Image (cartoon, rainbow, N blue to C red; front, side):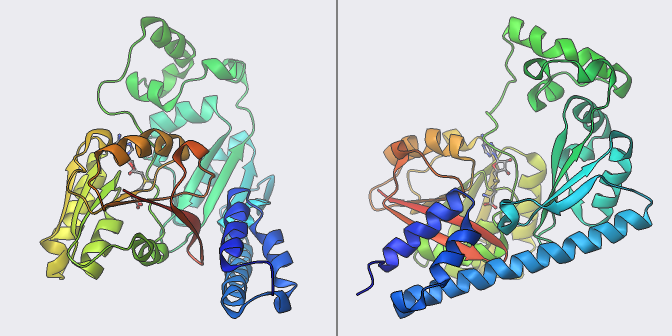
Length: 358
Ligand SMILES: C[S@@+](CC[C@H](N)C(=O)[O-])C[C@H]1O[C@@H](n2cnc3c(N)ncnc32)[C@H](O)[C@@H]1O
């Protein structure tokens, strides 16, 4: 009798995702087919195929980006699959400071997006004080490019890391590009004055749950036909829309980014599917104070630090019999131990689903 139960294969995959060692762990698991049950073997071989497919896709994307950058006359220092994150669709691209703007433009034309680039003045400040930024591919691309660049030189590069402006400082004190150097004093001055941005705490940036994972996540939550599902920090509403489509859910989202709220409500209203058009609503409101008392399922995709604050509070406020479902690649602290976990390895994304039953 093999000593590895399906549960322990699941746990090994979860640990591997948490520690970003999925490829070596799968290589070990796959080497001993005789020790596996049929179900375990299916799971292991599917995951191995997915990871090999992602590796091939990343190699192909590196060739495509190399050609686009070369055509645009941009020479870069290095481009590679970011080891050991290769299975996470991440490409590391390093460029000299002087080629940062043109590289970013090529990435945008290739379908990548960095929210900071929408505001060129803000991007200029950010690039002067920092050395790296992640460009996220569209849903069709499924890749991320970690762009890093050399030092800009001059006064900005000499400012110690703890005094460099955060996104919060850039938002709180918008300055024209020419006055970038003044950000050297914005952070200390704000700290001294103890000023806080009014409004909701930003729990994490927008990053949509990969479309290919949503069905499996909903199934794992055990959501029933006609249930009420709440997505806290719902982004563009993709989870709500799929929950309404598949299960006829009353699907309610809370989101602080007005552009995303508008996009989600518009997408829902314009859907040809009556189950979506009539059942999805997104509020421009803070997820932390959202009413979850009637929800059957609460869905969250936010960074671990936010989950560790939100989960204990939500479990107090949700009704009996409800389910809280979160997904995240990083390990959660034991203070928020879930009742069940499932490793999900899919061509469009890799994650760990955590489920709490109230
Ligand atoms: C990682 S995205 C998840 C989007 C969506 N739930 C999904 O899975 O596709 C997190 C979202 O939470 C939003 N957010 C951050 N802080 C928030 C807060 N205090 N209240 C509501 N939404 C917030 C962000 O704007 C972002 O769209």
